[in-house]
Image (tube, rainbow over all chains, first blue to last red; front, side, top):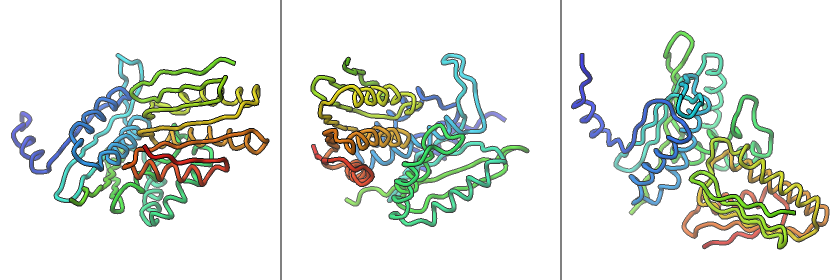
Length: 182
Length: 124
């Protein structure tokens, strides 16, 4: 069956998708997508926050997705995933999805659950404490991305881990940012 | 000692460290593929400067955006200044933020809490 482009177009309209990308996310692509995000949202003064969440999500996929792609033109292996930014009446949703190894899933789930139970004040404290420590093993950044996104989300972030293949789970994360009250 | 001058890119700030005057400026956005890798050269220069001179240091940080791995690198730089300050070096940090950017203001306040050096917050 050929791909139903009309249905896809209508779905995107209904869900008010501002930006979406599925595929291999290189640093170079991230910069281009980031420019697109800024361009789409330049009228809203929450743009800085939305951009910040977008960058953390995209760099998480780039560095940590368990699904990798070798990009010949830059000679690098990068992560594969999906990012969607959509708009509702009162808020923006920034969502990401990527594969994680089964072995890492439990730790990730625990981490997300713990972050979601913390107050903004406790998250701030945790962020400052973690920043003073050496990065966690296997981290290419500072292990601060999820904490930062939890701080920036106006509601507890939503996450899920669903079966993808025998060895992989699909991790989704959704951060909500309220539009500025006019 | 040579100055450290690095031009701004889309994902890294401009670095302008003047060895003569001790005025060190970092300006722009920061979300490189590897912040650790980018800031290593900055941290190396700063380490040497602290060792090899006694000039007062004035660090101006003016970020319009930085990601979380950059945040760690900023703290590493400030920690170097903190230990130099504890050994008697004259050190001053100024955190510049856009007037309407509350998140950037808060970031500055958090660094000020974490590091024991004279720390100014300056809105522009």
